[in-house]
Length: 114
Length: 113
Image (cartoon, rainbow over all chains, first blue to last red; front, top):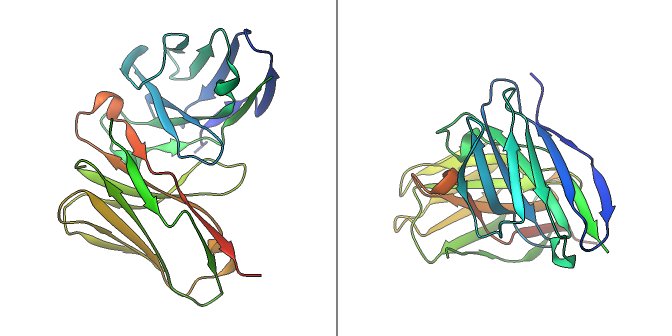
């Protein structure tokens, strides 16, 4: 079975720009969660998508938005980038209702905002 | 919001040593999880705990779910070089928005020079 795939692995953007990050979920998983991990910190929950709708959101502003597609893959969009948005963005797929034991994390996208 | 305090923030290990780390919370969780993250990778689940007081092992790893449901610890016995990495605790509350995980700040395990 394939794991969680994220793209791109790295990218550099300028403050004020917009960025789209992509995630392909593990085979058999129907739910995708996004986490932001700043350098030297633990991951923080951004939001979760199930049945192509947002199913819970952390303490992130509306300029963080997402999509889920019929094949369960997902995108994270960030508008009006700020320097503090520099972080590793992790995608985790799971079966809906599955506890943390059911999460499979991808290797992440390292975003640098300059 | 909920915060998890993980300690120590970093530690040095020598091959063969036992090491311990713990995690405390200001509020309760229904599930405690321990992850390991290697450089350039996402977190990988090591142990999951579902009941207060539960003690669970996975090879050389042992973790316990505190009886107050506000803490957990992880022990690694007879450490080996590949134990180097960052260990995170995470708590999950039933029916929390998005089944979210709340992570601690991590314990960085390094090899003694």
